[in-house]
Image (cartoon, rainbow, N blue to C red; front, side):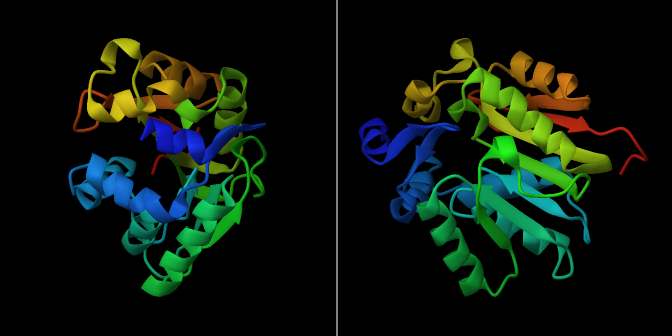
Length: 218
């Protein structure tokens, strides 16, 4: 996988950009041992998505999580996904059309989200932050906070620090970097979010942190 990623990615201004959208879903299926749907539903549950909530998936890849989110929040709720890779966005758009779901996918970078302030109830970042250098991680989290409504939630899921990286998934992504759980919490707090929940996500390699914006709690 590391060799595949190296052949089909590059280090752009916004960090590592993956370009193998057509094989990415199969690769994820193999790495998660066929449990991708279970993993995505776990993420949706952690985000506490409810019908009618608007959702932004940052670093959406081929759109699997955004599609799962859309099914959870319902047909009238707005769901969007951004990714810096044109190939990933093209694949995500095809999947959404095939599923008959109205989801907006855009080729954009996390450090300059193309949305107005306070637009979304929930912002998701799954296995994306570790691709970014430290300065862009900070800018990206601040952008997620900017587009979040009062009382909204940011959920970050990513690989833990070096001391936690012992499984297959972590070894594959080791060259792309890692994000210590403590760093994620510090980034969320520095952006003005209150961290209300944290912990592992079904495996010692993956950790999550949930931050909420000031305002009426959801």
